[in-house]
Length: 286
Ligand SMILES: [Zn+2]
Image (cartoon, rainbow, N blue to C red; front, side, top):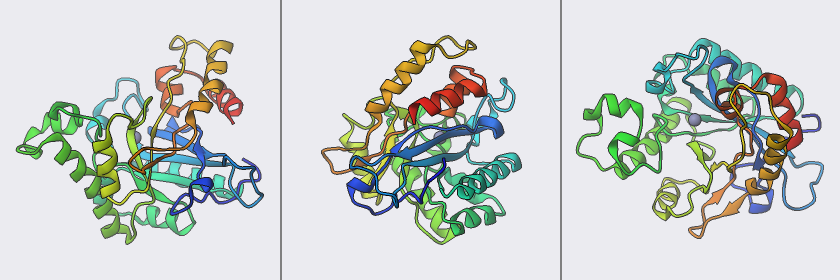
């Protein structure tokens, strides 16, 4: 991470956009730590090569494998998760970079949001990750989010498209109300191998909600057998997938800055790797 400069992700021209590489972070039960990296033109010294991203959310299977209650309160961050985020931000900043965070809107219901103000004051951008961590491609009510499966009355009478749009907007409204500023970009809960291709309706909805760029695509790659350490084949495949992780523009004009593999959830939950393998994959990817 040496030599990082501040990533420039908001309101920039396309050439300044970086693409996403995924980094560590499931320790506190966070999901979706990643990074944004590498301009297409030759890098100048004042432009970031790597921008680390971290989705501020709780994740099932952490800290104990049998934990699943976080599915219902993704944005109700516990003390460990908040401490982890602040410490991660501190370390990255000490090396000259920033973390681009994406917040699940429910966190803005918590009594104290000073730590988010602090992150912002220290130069770490915060984006929108929906209010309840909803699946933006859902076409059936039961696929939107666990919370609404258990409490369907919360979304009764609305179409999935309405619920999803409202959920994106709620996160923005909550952030503006509690923090006093608007989100910096949008990341879909979950990554999609095809991004938002084939879903111009979702692209348009995000544009309508004020987003010029989103981070939706997560390219397909091998994981190997769960619990086994990373093989050469898997690592080579992850390196190869970096090519599919480059920024691009949809026909609607929406920009996607993909997350580059491997994500923390992919490494620790899906592949059940140890930290060394994760770090190896990230180094190779970078
Ligand atoms: Zn997420």
